[in-house]
Structure formats: C-alpha cells, structure tokens
Image (cartoon, rainbow, N blue to C red; front, side):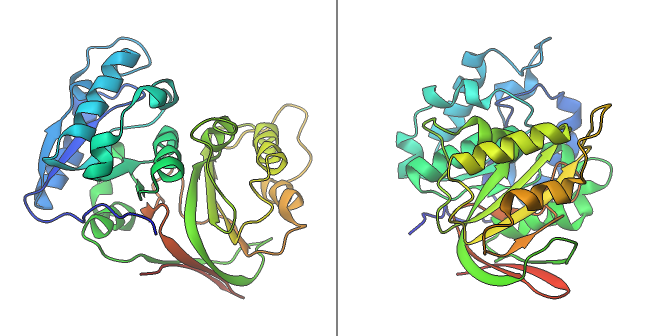
Length: 304
C-alpha cells in the first residue's frame, strides 16, 4: 500500500526550494504570505535567495544540497517547489532519500517536478502532490479553487473533482493508483531509474508550449515503451499554448491523441483541469482514485 506522508496541522513548517529554474524572491511573496495565513510556518531554502544569472536557480550542487537539506530536516513537513522549468533530472540521481523514507513529507509541484513525483513513487512508493507551485499564488490566484485544492490536500481532505465531457472522451468507470504529470518529463524518464510504472494505474498527462508533432512523438514513445497499453484510465489534461508548424500537422490535437489510444478500452477524458495554466487541481500521486467518464460529466474521486 502507498505510504502517505502525515497531513499538516497548524504551526507545521513548509519549506520552499527551487530545484530547477530560477525564480525571483519577489514572485514568491504571495505564496509565503498565503501559507502563513493558512497557519503554517515557512522556511526558505538557499535557492530562493539565489543570485544566479543563468536559467537555473544555482549550480547543480547548489540545487541538490538545498533540496537534500529540506529532505533531511525533520522539522519540515512539506516541501513546496517554487517553480519547475528544467533541472531536476540533472540532480535526481545524487539525492539521498534515507531520512525521507523514515520521515516522509509532502513534495509539492508539477512540470519539471514530475521527475521527483515519478522517482519517489516508482522507487519508494510514497505519495507526493502534483499541484500548483509558488507562482500560482500571484495575481489573486491564492483564492482560486485550484490553489485552495492544495490547502485541502495538505489538510487531509479527499479530492472529488468534476469536469464536463468533451469530444473523443471514452465512457467508463475504473479505479487505480493515480500517476503521471508532464508529458515531456514522462517521456524523458523512459528507461531511467525514475521510469514511471503505469500498469493497472490511472495516468494523467499535460504539457505546455510544445509543437503538436512533438506531442505526437512523445506519446508514441510512451506507447512503444508499453506505458499506454494496460492502463485502467487515461486523463489528458490541458495542453497549454500548443503550437503548429508552418505546414500544419493535419489534425486537431484531440484527434491526434485519440488516434494513438483508440485501440484500448479504458476510460479516457480530455481537457481535465491539470495543466500549466491556472486550472491545475492538486492530485495525490500513487493514491487510489476512481475515474468515471459518463455521458456529460467526468468525475475523479480520491478513494480512502
């Protein structure tokens, strides 16, 4: 059975780190203030105060050491990543999880943080939180239902999300452990020590800023690697800011995705609110969920 880190209580400490791309301290302030309003203490990692002038929030060793310190500190009950971008895959093999396994804590983020979610699930069988990060709290985002779903998850409330049915959805009602994240990261990890297990699971996928042909290529990579064949369900999130080439791909995104998975018989839905946009529900990876795709409504329910 999946190990759930302890849910948080008032006064617990949440650490904030940037294990990948650079994020300015100013863009974290709304997140810091909101976490304190929720009743938590906040501890900032060294990468949140970085003077880096490169894409990354510090050198590989800077970022590794900062995250390692948070993993090892028993006073920290959750680690919220400031942003994704790219870089977690450069340090994942040098992280040590011995203390984390003894005292699990919630790892929070999405995008490049998919590397952490997949690695921890596949190797340690501990649940993590695929959810909004620090930037989502800005511009009033701290009050939207998606950021508040993170608050609910940290407090131990079970998720129940619904969304309208769209074209190409396939009806069905199945249960399974929920796994997934960013498509580019999932494809990138195939064949590595962080490769995600998908058999008999419900897989969710999203991405941002990709050309349609590249989404097609990454989906076919997952298919050829056997990641799509024996699922219990498939959730396509929102593919934000998708681009096409000057000579068009030739089909819509949904048509393209459907062609790849139409031979299977598990329930499938599209445009579920998991994404790089503000529509990004908190999802507990590894936890058993029920996916029901009906005539008009999609329901994703966390099971106890």
